[in-house]
Amino acid sequence: MTRKKNGPAPRALRQRLLRWFDRNKREMPWRGTKDPYRVWLSEIMLQQTRVPVVVPYYQRFLQAYPTVKKLARAKSVLRLWAGLGYYQRARNLHRAAKEIVRKHGGRFPKRLEDALALPGIGPYTARAILSIAYGQPVAVVDGNVARVLVRLFCLTEAEVDNRPALQPLAERLVSRRRPGDFNQALMELGSTICLPKIPRCTLCPLERLCAARQAGVEKKIPHRQKKRPRPRLELKVFVIEREEKVLLVREAGGYFSGLWHFPYTTGRNKSGIRANGYEIGTGAGRRVATVEHTTTMRDLVLQVYQPPVRAGNRRAVSESNRHTRWVRLNRVQRLGVGAATRKVAALLQEKRRKQQREDVAGRQRPAS
Ligand code: SF4
Image (cartoon, rainbow, N blue to C red; front, side):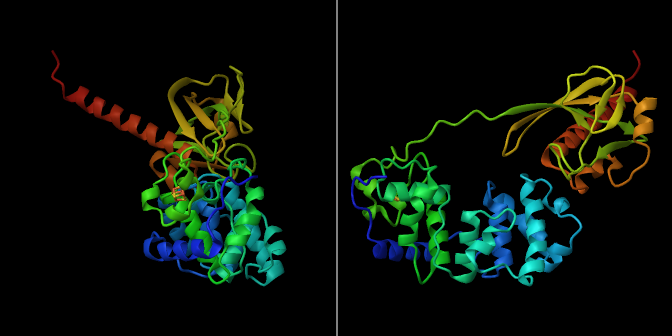
């Protein structure tokens, strides 16, 4: 990493940045709290997810589990996470809560090594929690902070993805007096002012200190790496109906691990279809819809089939239990289902309503 020019003096940078943050920070329900549990929960939910999406989930989650101990005692937290995506976060949160109760007396640990040993806690999250909740002078480097630092110091060889290389610089800059606010301010600057493609330099409190701006290269750095194409996965999803209810299943692995979902298969077999261990029948039935859904990991294409109810699937999916459930279509969303399953249910409901309207119109039409 080399510098073309000297960047801002740390003291001036801290002063300007914190003054700007005090006046301009966005309102968020977790802002201002020093409760480590709340800080931790917000940091986990904010991974890969935008603030407006997180807010209602955060509030509902805290209502249900106001303390680490209550969270640790929960049977499953996926119902309240349903729709937020990236469900491994929820599983890890739950496991970490149990560990915190068992090993740390129910309080988020203060030592970096202990925090890093918890499930789902990486260097960024651990430092964010320790600085915000406990006032420890440790710096965070997420994607936003990396971009701001590369521009402020005009770091020509640093790719924005090489965060460990930026950590020592961030540690030198972080405010000893207000480390949590400093970290949040730098992240806030990156997400509202120092934007990836077109930085809003005229609104930036650091404009006069910024080496990239002074050199006129603020839009050229950091050099963006080419995005790798996202993996695309096609699933056959089966909507099996019985007495106006549809079958949902739940299992420990697979693409919807721990969430209720329609049975699915990735196989190309045309007969004797089994999905998630359930015999669907000898044919997939007719395809009724195609639903596309983007997750943090991949693009999903769900080909939705309605197989005829045959002896096979009736026997295999007899009654509701821990792993199978018969649910009315309009109640699917009340279970812990992911966004893809919600989309399928909503689409089928809409189709049903349309069919009903057409049936009514057909009956009312005078015979010619
Ligand atoms: S002056 Fe522009 S490039 Fe520099 S930190 Fe501010 S917004 Fe980013």
